[in-house]
Structures are given as C-alpha cells and as structure tokens.
Length: 83
Ligand code: SF4
Ligand code: SF4
Image: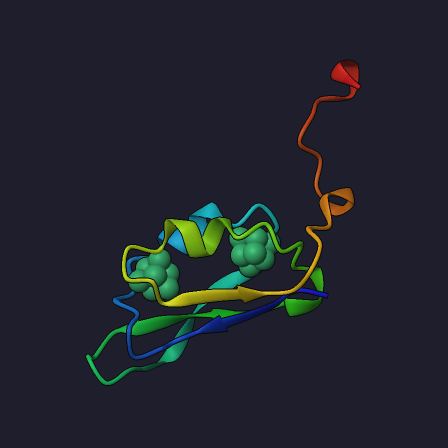
C-alpha cells in the first residue's frame, strides 16, 4: 500500500495537492506550521492509489509518496464506453 508523507513545515497551504488528488483524500490541518500556514494532511490514507499527482503538483516539494505499484483499479481513468 502506498504511503504519503507531508513535510508540514515546507507546506505553504496552497491546497494544490488537495485539488490534484483523484481520490479526494487530502485535506488541510487545523493546526499551523512553523511558517504560520495550515498544512496539507492525508485524511484517508487507506484509499491512496499511489498516483503521485499530489507530489508532482506541490510547488514546494513537501510531499513524498512511498510504495511499490500504483493501484489504478481504484480509480476510473476511462469512461465506461472507452473500455
Ligand atoms: S498519491 Fe494520488 S491518491 Fe495518493 S494522496 Fe497523492 S494524489 Fe491522492
Ligand atoms: S501543494 Fe504542497 S505547498 Fe501546497 S498545500 Fe499541498 S503540500 Fe502544501
């Protein structure tokens, strides 16, 4: 299973990762980091498919994705008529 690590003190609270996540499992903390921003956090890590879109999107390189295989089976990339 993939695992996500957010370096909260690198985060600037832009929420780009939240918008990028196809699983909608990222959110923002209720605490602030050392810079005074609400930082990104994983709300439901068990549903992560390891796509790395959050890490690629982050302008501050605050997210690392660890894991082996991307689990595309949990996400519909194609419309049913394209299968
Ligand atoms: S790796 Fe993909 S599914 Fe997992 S938190 Fe990041 S964007 Fe979401
Ligand atoms: S994209 Fe990066 S800087 Fe922006 S909220 Fe997410 S982790 Fe923080």
